[in-house]
Image 1: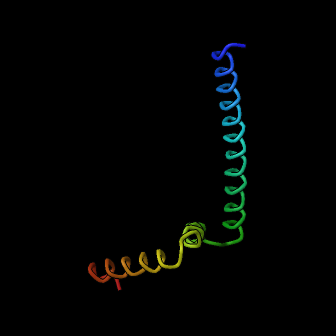
Image 2: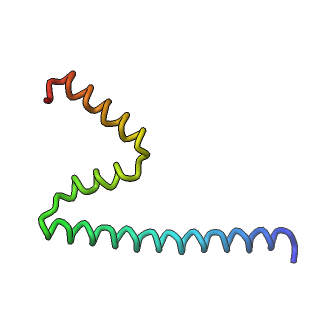
Image 3: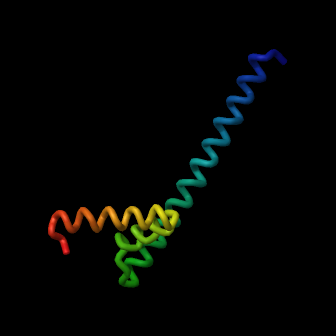
Length: 80
């Protein structure tokens, strides 16, 4: 087999892996959407839940900095 064929085969395999992962990602995204729909049906505010999920991903120092900056902006705009 020539180097061109090996490279083409490797490229095809990589593309196929990416396509499979994209399908898995879509499936997970659909599952997450279903959980938010369930939460909404139960009476939870999904916008707030999304914010909480986002905050939990952050390290504490980054979360503290974001909170301090938000508080500064709110005070500057009179949003007490």
